[in-house]
Length: 176
Image (cartoon, rainbow, N blue to C red; front, side):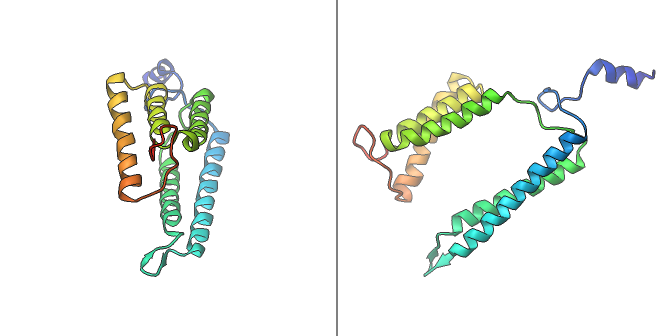
């Protein structure tokens, strides 16, 4: 055995940037390629549908403009990630716990359900606190100010500047 082989054996299985083990093999590459193809196909289908809705109407943005922009962004991200994946020697995305994904999904479902009853501010603040603390493991000194600032920015941009109507919350104040 060469010195390089010894070093590889001591290093253990391949890991990502965070040190998590990576799955390897042909099956992992095929799964990732399929995922990228599906994302690209979905983004193209969404772009076509949003185009059909109309991007611009009577000197104003049409109903399809925002979905079209999101679709184009999604296409660019998926295609870029696929190209990056093909160029890199990485074998698989980092392993994550299914519990994290379940907490993220469940919190978004709770956010949507609570939005109608509680308004904008309370569910948004709680979602940001949960995601920053439980999912990102940020310290409380960052969680609280970022959550309050993020909620305030969302409220100002959507309610004040864009005039998006939000349901009245339990406090009877728009957005709260």
